[in-house]
Amino acid sequence: MKLAFATTAPESTRADALVVFAAPAATKGGSPRLLVADALPGAAVSHIEEALTALQANGKADEVRTLTSVPKIDAPLVVVTGVGRVPSGEEPTRESVRRAAGAAARTLGGRESAAVVLPVAAPEYAAAIASGLVLGAYRFDEHRGEKARAAATAPLASATVVTGRKTRAADGGKLSTDDLARAVAEAEVVARHQCWARDLVNTAPNELYPQSFAELVQKMAGKGVKVEVMDEKALRAGGFGGLISVGQGSARPPRLVTMTYAPRRAAASLAYVGKGITFDSGGLSLKPPASMMTMKSDMGGAAAVAAAVLAVAELGLPVAVTGYLCLAENMPSGTATRPGDVITQRGGLTVEVLNTDAEGRLVLGDGIAFAAEAKPDAIIDIATLTGAQIVALGKRTAAVLANDDALQGALTQAAADGGESVWPLPIAEEIRGHIDSTVADLRNIGETGTAGTLAAAAFLREFASPTGDDESGRTQPWGHIDIAGPSFNEGGPWGYTGKGATGFGVGTLVEFARGYTADRT
Ligand code: BES
Ligand code: MN
Ligand code: ZN
Image 1 (cartoon, rainbow, N blue to C red):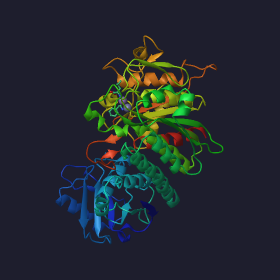
Image 2 (cartoon, helix red, strand yellow; image 1 turned 60 degrees about the vertical axis):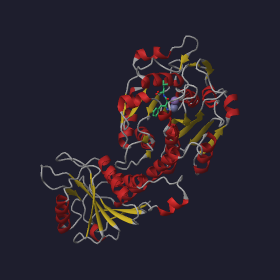
Image 3 (cartoon, rainbow, N blue to C red; image 1 turned 90 degrees about the vertical axis):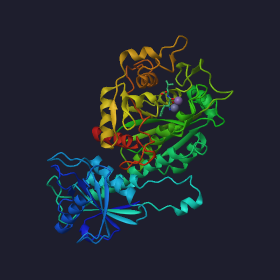
Image 4 (cartoon, rainbow, N blue to C red; image 1 turned 135 degrees about the horizontal axis):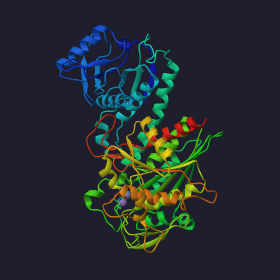
């Protein structure tokens, strides 16, 4: 989508539709309140508010109403999109505006252009609108036949975030149009990469497998990002026993992709490790058919890492970020790993594989151990790791765990900044004992039915700092984001989230890199 920012009078902006935000009335029975500061003519505002009342619209989230022939407005359509309840005396949250922009974009398919009236005069809100529009207009048509593609209406092509010429900044200061334009441009970079992560996840697993995933990343990486791919031979030689074990049942061998963004004068170095199971059948511990239907999305962590590294590079953030994509297909066959097999992972830890469906931690163990060799300031892994995450937090909130409280807090903050819902979980002390093996260093499952998300994190923690501290007494800071629920939307569309892949994680990882440098510099 083409995006811009302008300070033209919204009512005379040339566009197919003018989009305005609305919030429910403060008192019951009142008409919804338009959030347009003083940027629209009074006659237009009162007409729209009366029309909304007549339509029994109330400005709640995901409510979008389209009006025609609004007096004093040049655009043929006015689209009113609800942000939901705003506590009195407060501004709507950026996230509620982002969702409302997304809901509006979903209804604007087939239109060329929209002008969106800034509801709060601050750059963060312009960014929220830009992001919501790009994500809301997202479509995935790659797998449709030619006829269907030709018949489909095109998504909204361009949008301008507008504010009245005389609009004052919400904080009382001067409203910088440069800041607003920059906020829109930066938000577009992140949202475009979120869409790319969605594309990767939505792609059918017969087309996206470890080798083709690696090739796509090589093709996408522009200047500033170096991509190295280790094939199965290199992985075997390098002792990556987790990737080899998970991938050995498949006709499509595993890959480890390393993406390096190392700007001059980097203030810090971060490692992002993504689970990239391009299809998770469970292996010999086979999943039931219904549980397999969405398992093309089991590479959502790797997709988020790939997209975040490219976005950080395009934004030119002053922090070095290395992405590790742990790619394998988990299949049952005569060469597949057996429950009971013992493998040796990168770094030397041995693991008794008691359930081949707990494969994510095996490939991530290798990736985290490999990342730790470079002693980055922090390692963050992200993975569609456990069904237990969905039991604990539902389908829209990810779990954040860490071996470092400050890091867990920073990740939670980054998620809030990036508009993604996460919640911290502990790695309770007694959970470590759940992954003790009778024959090897570790076993790959905890106690059945008990704290599955915590047990998986306890397992991964061993690979960041195998002996707790290294020779110099340093514990490698490590954090983990379990996105089993939020990575894929099986329900209906809401806000800027359509059916299918969500791109969850990209926002958190980009904002973590941004915040990390901000703290350090
Ligand atoms: N990829 C799954 C987790 C998952 C489940 C992601 C549902 C998204 C939606 C993972 O590999 C898995 O199978 N985990 C097992 C672990 C268990 C065997 C210890 C699980 O959660 O059941
Ligand atoms: Mn599995
Ligand atoms: Zn899996």
